[in-house]
Length: 383
Image 1 (cartoon, rainbow, N blue to C red):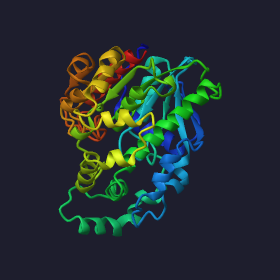
Image 2: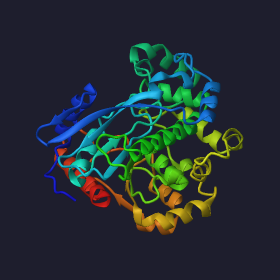
Image 3: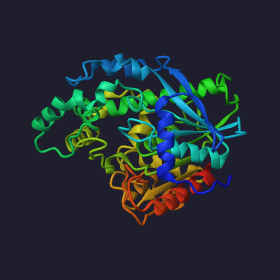
Image 4: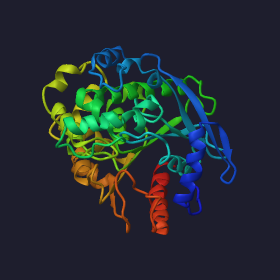
């Protein structure tokens, strides 16, 4: 691991936010880190997902079926490269549910790149970050529809502009949670194929790929490792931050993620027979996904894998995380792997799952210290 002097989270987040918002390749002079943006166009990897997406109910303010959202199938992803980077290694960084930008994660990627000497690819989950029309998150456009959802779901908590699109889409068709994740898994496989074919300008064909995953990105990563599709992550190391829980022990009810009605609709759907009727049982990601729904589903299959893979998995759980609880992580991995892999931390300042390193508070020194602690651990594990 490469030593990096203390990072000022507040200041650095603001600097990187401006750079990432422009989506222009550049060099950050003070760290000599290069940021590049690459075009990605789906090959149409999964016809079953496309058929399901076309059949989903469409919220009134969206007006487009999921399979016809062009922004989702053709988009750009950023790559952060440290000076003299290793062309035979790379870290994939996956974000959380309902994330709309890389504002929070840019500093994570830069810090990991500098401390490991490895490039970091920030890859967006389907219908997240820059993979949706901007109108889905425009307060002026959504004002009427927020009021409408509050009226129709009078008892619902946390109905907000920030989560309206995801909440409405999941309430109308909860299977979207699965199809979006599966679509992303195939997108990642396409990216890996391109790298192995020598089609990436900064990575060699034999590049070893490891993963840093946050929140729901951790669930997706667990599913990809469990599936071992095309052996693409057979020897990969996985570091999870605020992630790794069994699905039905998560709590997505949040003003930043989804409203309480959408969360209830989704949990109810995935804990009944609809799941097994709608999903193609021949798909390589099907069984791994089902095994992560409930601790009692395919328990031996799931825990046997994590027991065998425990030396290449590490997880940081935060004590005040109300979305991804420590108990849920232990339930997913099983007692043996959890004892080996999970580190439980707490901070001496107010934080949350959605904002683990708050940038607008007085305790900046404490935030900086804990940030370096977390990413020092991550970099050491992924080096």
